[in-house]
Length: 218
Image (cartoon, rainbow, N blue to C red):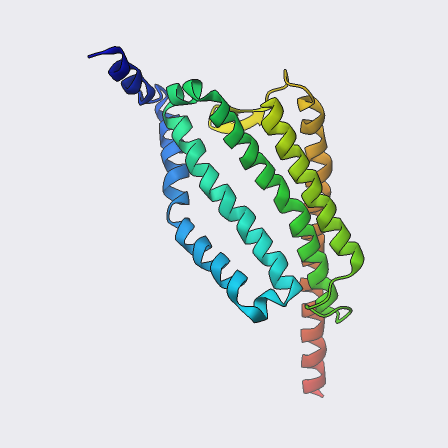
């Protein structure tokens, strides 16, 4: 066996940790069947004129695209988990994939917040699904600018790395500790707003249902 063959074979040496192999295979196994679903959904939501004209559906499509991207990069990360020598050989690719996956994950939070708030406003008939308040548009633009900046900075500094079966900031890289802390300030409030908004929607629908039942009773 020559040196080239040895190098290629070493790249495909399995992770000695069996649990990590199982998790890597699970990442890939769960992600692959979802790809056609997201592909069809994204195509439908970007080509249907009625859906494209609806701001709420356009925002939902952004959410689908972000999740689609995460699905694809989970497959890439899964391969690096199964074959750790490949990660070491192609470290730049592995770190860039980790950075991209993290940025796509971050992008979900402002989208979720805007979707939840807009749905409350639509349910309360304060706005129509075809029109968004300027404040919500500004918020989503700021969210995308932040996410894109984090991604570009991460790709440049290579500040994300695979850590076991997940991804984590390499705190030795420029700005990584700060970005790691900022994620808490973005994610936690977004989750609170999103969960709170949907809780209010459920309460509102329940209240409307009770009122209708009372009226019918009389």
